[in-house]
Image (cartoon, rainbow, N blue to C red; front, side, top):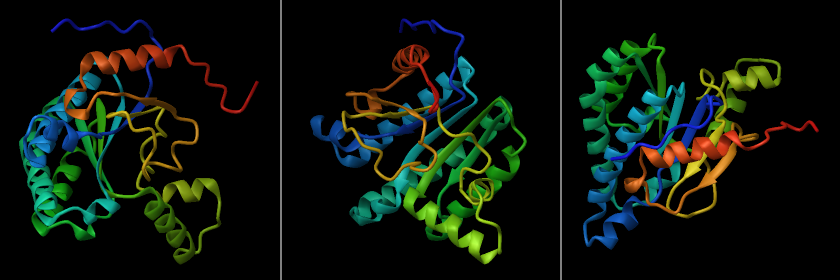
Length: 233
């Protein structure tokens, strides 16, 4: 495949992705929804590798929301199996490549074996610094904001922006410069609502399983042309 070139030295520090369209991708191919999610994992790996090659410091992926528990049990079980395999298959590779893996979300509803895997890989990669990969799993931004407010109250902390940020799942990563949503839908769907205050939003018509290196390069090149004033003139 011909790889497009980055036409700027103005790289974003953090790119977040709403990985939308797996089910529709599968339906158009007369495949079960689980096949779409499997294809979505291949796209996830492609984008992580692309970010690694391009020198991006942080990427975040919206994998499973707090609202996704409404889906059929068979689909949820398939998603957890895919997540298990992802953790197992990438543990050693991430250590070799100096990639840190972070899970954003409420892990209390995770199966015990997945919770153990998450804790293990998080501990092993905590000092890795080339790229930070965050997977939002059982994550909802409203839930995160409520959790942070409760922590402030319970710990008797002064209600400041700095203290509030320290109570968020994203306390150790910068706010996203870019948020990308695939499949043509144009909404944030309860993803990083607090952190997205000054994010540049990109909505891509492709379904997530078809998203890859050249799409990411296109977005970064378009991002470099935007004038980010952060409220100033």
